[in-house]
Length: 240
Image (tube, rainbow, N blue to C red; front, side):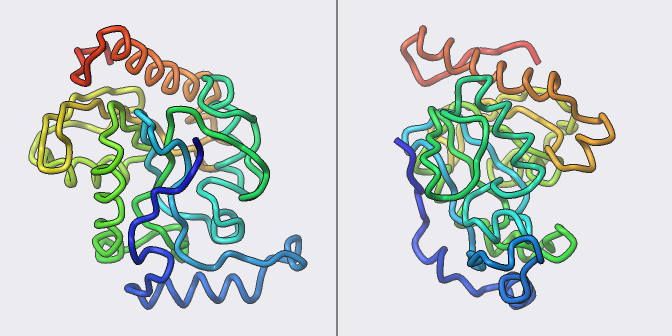
């Protein structure tokens, strides 16, 4: 099942004046290549399997990507790198995400972000992420994922804060895997996997290769497969 677990009030949210102004300005002015398209220009909801055991958390919508298409990681270079990897790992029905009505389905995976509106320079301010935090809490609370994949350092640090483990000295290292203890948000332990963000800056410089990214999704698959074999929600300890 592919559907949004849209938190109440998300689609009409105007809490952050800077982000509202920017997302709407971009939607009005448009990029020349997309001048005939209607931009979404609103907060972008999460997308995926409503029963997912794997949750992927990015930073924020791209101005001419998700802010245009209305779907997470869709319409820009980051999505062009992400969805083929998800397809190879069996989490996606297609290797491309084009628009909200393209028929793509995610399996056992839900995709969301720390910030729901496109920020200028792709950098949301801490206060703006704070304003979005209840939406991410809502999704995590409903899904109760077994695996959370942090796409980038900012998402990783925000997730540590949300899951009440911000005081621990867990470094952000691509491929690292940490066990999150039960908390007010998570009813059972879960695994936090670290990945470089699939931004063009990382993929075109070779900092993040397809093989490196595939390894992340393969590890996520291994964890949920092991959880299914054990027949319980509480995971064991996989190797980082």
